[in-house]
Length: 437
Image (cartoon, rainbow, N blue to C red; front, side):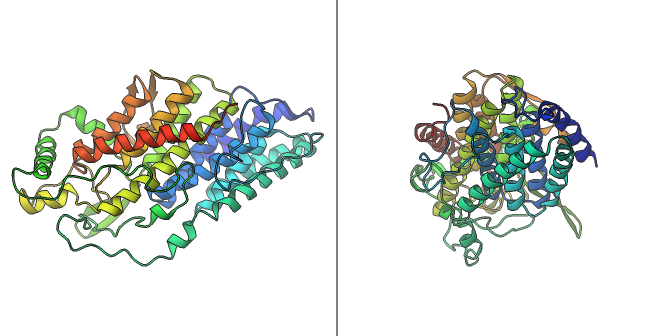
């Protein structure tokens, strides 16, 4: 009920501008789009989508909103002709009165709703908006909904060709029995998450392996090896964490499925995904500078593209190297009772997903909103953690990376090389896709 009431209040601003029957130009405050992003995040959390799968939902929903708004702004470019296979989405005739803001939010909700399991979490909210608007101006309402639906239909049709459906039908992942390869970890010993994600069609990359990182240090349990040096670093760092380092690890935890174990009782705590955290940062940053609808939609869509391609590239390497997690090695060779501060995620170690996607997102946000962009990140306050302040997107991405060492779930080389990988992805994305003319 609270969600419905909040959205109802937000839409009164939009309705007032359209009561005359004329579609207004894009207004300066895209509050409704920010609210739509938050509602989609809630649905993703509720349904416990994996980090890569969550990035796919954010991508298509944000593409739908962006492509709707770009139809009335000649300063911005459609993705058609820039992204392989992206459709040419026709708008309505020029004499049709359309509120592009309403159409964009409707396209966002309809697209996101078809990609989550709990579609009702979004449809309940959007119906409140639509029912009120219908009473105010039937003509603009019908045109706007028709346009939003057409854009959503086109984007969803394009989404069906990204190989997602075929990866759902793949055989169960088979673990390698070679030494140094990843195996499921405590407490849940959960099966491998998205082992075939590298087969998903990227947005800007030519292939999943385009920015293949250098390989991890060779698995070697000799005490003088580079590998064991990294193992010892994780062990010693996590045994003497400061309160600040513990806070950093917790702030960037972003584990969508944290398994609580109390005796024979197991239950999950649902949390934000890593991509969801960066979508939140994009929204907060755009809102802090009063960016208009089109500028905000551009920030969201570029961030979602960076996250999407970042996960494809990272997961390609994860299941290529299939590298062992610190927890497994430390328990076997150093301390069988040791546990990391954070729960080890159910997929291979190399490279660090947080490091890859955070670096990629930071690159595009820097390009869109500026370097040395200071901001306060309120993302985790809903989950009991304080606000953190950053001097730039790069600083935030670097903290996200090192948080995985503090959390005890990654070796340093996976973080450092993951950041290089993500930076290259972000730069490549900007070279291939131009949102402004």
